[in-house]
Length: 428
Ligand code: EPU
Image (tube, rainbow, N blue to C red; front, side):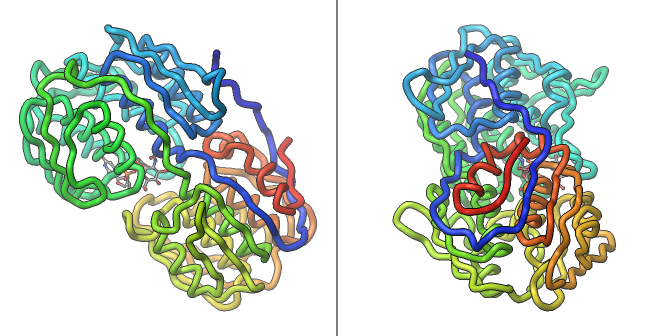
């Protein structure tokens, strides 16, 4: 069974009453894509639960199929993906699939560890400015691989991956993940210093450990991996994907802009503590509940300054939502982007809705206005599209977000979920 997702073209939003009720987040996009890649390490039948029905999952499923795997939704359980990995895989990631999403580079580590070689087309993905992969390449070569770029592909070879100490120049999420997967099957001990600490990395390490790997330190800046010496020593497993903290942040922003009270089931406040702290400074209340996060917004919020940083700092993925909230808050907020150079492109779209935002290189100065005005706007990437839909909740008149296929890459029915808590929003 293929992973079929309804295509959407645009999201139409009108202002409505304050939001009220319960909304559930799906499994984390940025976790499940890596968990799917991890299955390439060993033959067997895998079952992933709490998998979001989004187009990036569809693209990763296509990548696994191109390598020889069988991937499909389980007929027995909702949101469950079954993956059968054969005894021999084809260590290839073709450009036609890779160009759709940047996370595809994550198959490099597991393919190399399993097959001793891999050919992965250079990735595309969100239009977030230059996104190099030099840290992936450097780390894998420190483990003993030889890598070169040939006709737009990264071609990697390693007869033997050997554990070593790798110091990352920056705690890159993708580089950490590629290295953890390769090191799991390498010979000897690998220590990754300045590793990324995101909850999605801990989720990957947990699944790898269940596959027979030995990884300590997940969630800290130092990961210690005792390699099995051979991918053959790893095996199939089942795993439940953690909740999507960026989807949760989207609903927090929706409450911030539209007002009201929401329970976000499946979200974890401890995975978004810095964001909860910022929203508290702005006047919202965000607390941990039994099965999720409870959020309340009393009305117009206060501006704050924000600066994006690797986890546990304020995630760059939250920024379009923060900028949207600041656009209608009282006062002036300065937002600094420290991760992705091009991540202010949606600001032009917010300006078309009447936002008063000035950008200069990595900074945005956001002067809150009383009210935005609905307009036709364009999604430039997943989070930007979702943030524009959220902006529409508090804008006068109708907002139409076009190029909404970007949103479907990362959200399972964003419009439907917001409509279920009282928003006037629909996807077409
Ligand atoms: N970088 C390098 N060299 C490298 C790797 C990264 O210079 O070899 C730079 C990047 O250009 C960027 C910074 O380091 O400036 C951070 O990149 P990182 O590798 O941490 O990010 P990523 O793995 O490419 C993931 C998420 C992004 C999220 C970032 C940061 C996935 C699929 N993507 O990307 O999520 O913004 O971490 O937290 O996990 C999204 O979900 O919409 C999204 C873009």
